Image 1 (tube, rainbow, N blue to C red):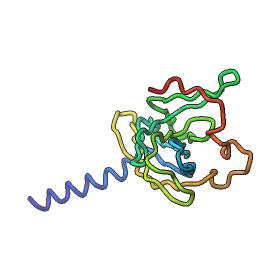
Image 2: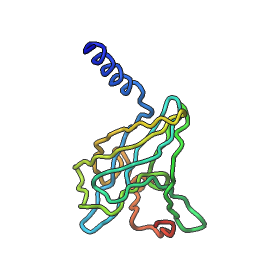
Image 3: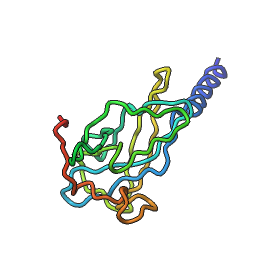
Image 4: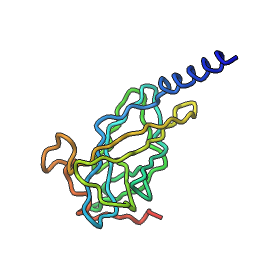
Length: 166
């Protein structure tokens, strides 16, 4: 009986490793200054069989959401999205000026060179949820970004409409 229970536990543990829904690459979070209460996290996500990013969390922020930014006229608008589709076999880039993870109500400044924990929750086509736990480096610009690129843009100096926030 003990052998069967141990075998079952081992099989379940291995199954969760192989059932990974999504792969995350090049994740980073923008550094902040004293008093700054929000920042963004950016990454590239892919899923062999497709998935949805349905939740995000981090202990460094009071609120963590997936957001979409887009220009409407000459105003950059940002809004939370309840789920982000990750099409099968295609990478989705979360980047400044587009989809990104918004960390709000920060509990402390995020210093360049540090890292933060970030949990992403994915749902597959069957409705099964999996979590991806990340340790995300804090930087002032995307690794390898050129000055003046969208990735190096100062998120805090644009006119934005935050009217859809609660």
